[in-house]
Length: 93
Image 1 (cartoon, rainbow, N blue to C red):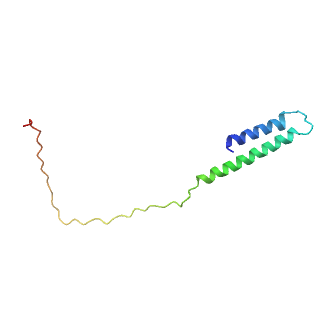
Image 2 (image 1 turned 45 degrees about the vertical axis):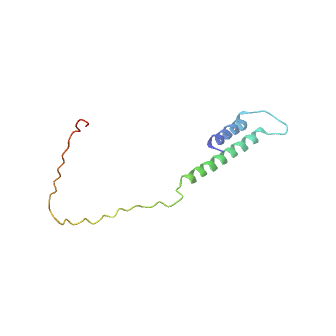
Image 3 (image 1 turned 90 degrees about the vertical axis):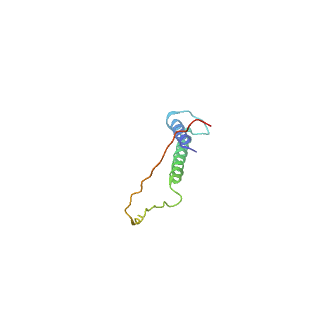
């Protein structure tokens, strides 16, 4: 039963318990209303319990640690220059 069904049972039970004043020889509608309200509250509690248990992580959460790497020592202080020659494509031969 979901939250909507539980609230429906609580509302229907409240209507039977407090608003309806019909007399049936073998059935007391006030008692039926209280039973429906109790069933609705029990269903709401069970639904919320299962929703809460579903949100918990199943596996433990791992912490990731970043370990700083040691810098590579510089062996030479030299500058490398790059030369590129870019030509536009000429007419096809």
